[in-house]
Amino acid sequence: MELRCGGVGSQAVGRRMDGDGRDGGGCKDAGSEDYENLPTSVSLSTHMTAGAMAGILEHSVMYPIDSVKTRMQSLHPDPKAQYTSIYGALKKIMRTEGFWRPLRGLNVMMMGAGPAHAMYFACYENMKRTLNAVFHHQGNSHLANGIAGSMATLLHDAVMNPAEVVKQRLQMYNSPHRSALSCIWTVWRTEGLKAFYRSYTTQLTMNIPFQSIHFITYEFLQEQVNPHRGYNPQSHIISGGLAGALAAAATTPLDVCKTLLNTQENMALSLANISGRLSGMVNAFRTVYQLNGLPGYFKGIQARVIYQMPSTAISWSVYEFFKYFLTKRELESRTPY
Image 1 (tube, helix red, strand yellow):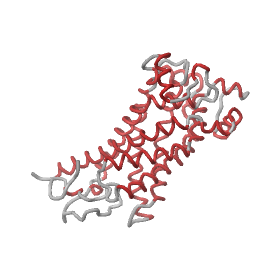
Image 2: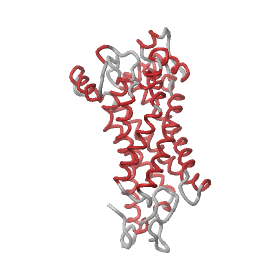
Image 3: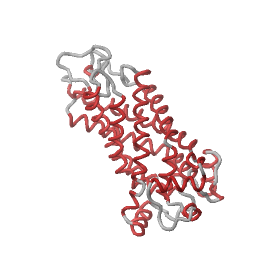
Image 4: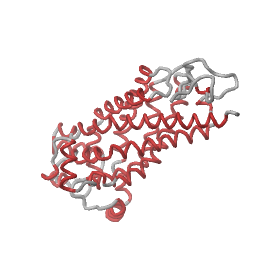
């Protein structure tokens, strides 16, 4: 699929699709509108629709690996839930707990991922365009990309944090919750609303550097392998996968702390002589070190990288496809026949 000069949709030929407006092919009619010059409402709708589809597909496809990652980050796992590899973990979970067990909690994750990613990509694209005009109007500013990614994360995590809490409690071995609704009701009744945002500051502390590394790396790699920034599935998959792997490895210690705050792992808290609920990033860091030392901060790093690499590749390739497809349809609908 490619938009070409001289036909329907030629307004978008050879133009960058990320908003900095550089001409990659010099093919533009005097009265035509390119991709980024669509009306604001349509552009926002396009970004949000593409983002929602990317988020739902990304989390759905990779959810079984995410379930394994959550369990492998357990600071004091049950002897029946100790795993040495992702494949071995999935095989053991399905054999001993049921074929569908790795998918428990998928419904609540999909409900959160759609709106969260819609706001995430829409905010990122618009902030990036605005900041690039301020910082580096002739090209692509990595500083602008990093700041835009950080701002988008604030919106994304505000929606996703409650879904993450419910999802991770359902994923844990021997979870007392049998459905998302029962988990939500139990947490609300016993711990209150604050339980759904107990790890929010840690989530932001993790995701702001994660997304900054992720977006800066993705945009940098796109400049190398796809300099004209056309729709190129291979480049989106490669850039997205490598960016996700690097960002995931660098922020694993924060993810371990986030998992502890979300799951409130009873055995680990008992061993650390913590009564009640653990809260706060500093306390989580201290508890992880107390129980497992420095290696504890990197528990589940293999699963995290293996999860994030295809996850971000799927997310970017799906997002760029829908952005291209929806824009092409919009341009075609404006072209008189």
